[in-house]
Image (cartoon, rainbow, N blue to C red):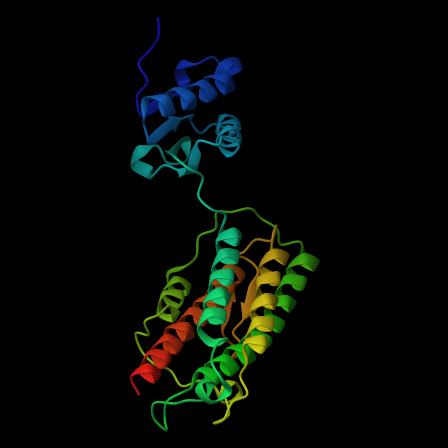
Length: 268
């Protein structure tokens, strides 16, 4: 008798020796039926069945993500599964963001003459050149801190595999860094550009490429447990994953500013 495929699969009904093959067949059947959200009940015990299920899920191209069920649905005695295209790896997603930021700077700022790069809408406003100078300074300093954190993480053997989750405070700070600015904070003195900044695309590009390279170097580390200091203060520390994400969010923040400057320049 063929049992109907539903969104819940209880492994207690399967002999342990057949469990792995049963999970593989269930995933294939659920995908064919068009199911997207599943719950696999494997029980708690000493975790043997749970580990087997997780290995099957990790190796399945049809699984987008998975994790422990909430307490009311079995807790760690059951695994929730979402089918679909696999979610992009956290570091791969960051690499894409760094590439997109650089591409936009190249398109926006590279065609500008030195005079237009230093154009400001008002005395207290920044120019495109100042934005580039600021990003290059922050990127250079922050790159050093991130590199030190990665090296320390390697020495200490702080490895891990994602997906990683981050605390609400770090997540809030990341969201607050994204454009459009929710509130404005003066740049620390060491990162303030000169009035006639010699900011160039080349300087920004070097900082962006260094940070991108550090994303690659972070592979295999536990992005939550490895900590990196803020570029502005050694007293403020983030998880490495958040630190890398904040750096490129900061670039987007000033790209937003540069777009506004170029638009205002066209109206002037």
